[in-house]
Length: 430
Image 1 (cartoon, rainbow, N blue to C red):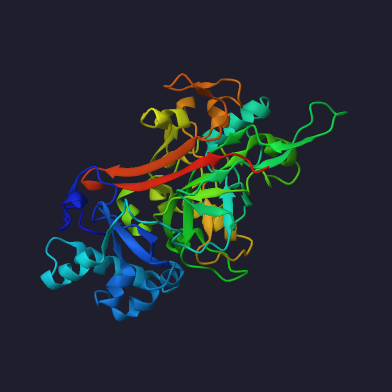
Image 2 (image 1 turned 180 degrees about the horizontal axis):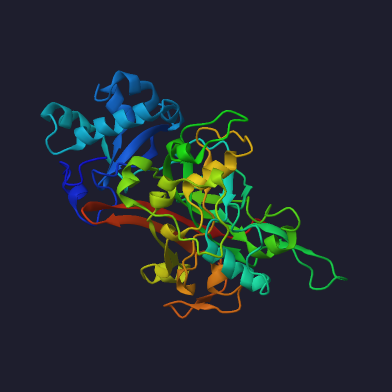
């Protein structure tokens, strides 16, 4: 873990409000003359790792992986390589760096504001979980008021396999999907139209850095070591399509048209100061089965990430108004920890691959104001949300931009931010 009092020679990296201090150094990727280069964020800049490798600033064992277009090769080199790279980059950006090395590093700096950020990881597979009990309970109250939580919820982490090919990086627009929705009555025909109930879902992405072999489950005591880092994630949903198709096999076309991820991957080592105990399980809740329980995970297996969702409508942007905050929540209160998600996913022998994403599912807090989607905030469209312009929303309209933000804070440690995950809604294709 980096020295929390360490300073960088980039002044903006030492500012208390920066997302990217020296102790963070999240990984990303950007375009340089049509080629994708890996980078790390520091202050308002990014450091080109391809360039650093070319000028001899990185150890020879890391040259090939740092000149690759994605992080997958670095992930395949294991923890020793991850640690060596962070140690090297921390020293390179430290205020006491060798002047010759500083000069070379300065030549590899680019402004984040002017960069074309890309997806930094090739994602082979995507799994979406349902780890927030507050979200599961409120959604259940809308559709099953007599039994909000199904009997299995507190026994096993609920999840389903999503579509990796439609995962897009922050900044890419989302086209309103077209789909079938529920007929008004049993004797009428269903409609195939643009969704009228487009929603966002506030989530975190967990990146698998260390794979497991087929038929070799990952013990929960080792699960944390298989994670490389986290990002913000928005798993868009067409609620009217979803309500018609999800029984009996679960989400399909209502979810797989687009999933947005942040361009920054925060390494697990940067999150060490922000771990927290797992959510309390009251006495009536079933005891965890041994494959889902470890003392270490219960003591500090959760991650305290503060989260926020904002909206910027076309009218707001036309009038130069700041985005409007819709809700704030925290990942600390998730019912299932990241290690439990990994252990359960592989408990039947399923093989996770390098770059796989495990998403937490919608993250909501205990109050309605901390709900992580419009389905909860508007009670499935029954309670419109007023906006500062006089507009209101039940679900998203064309031209709306949704912005996710996340940050971590702990006494004695610099604040870190996960950047933003944002996308604007385009009209459906006719």
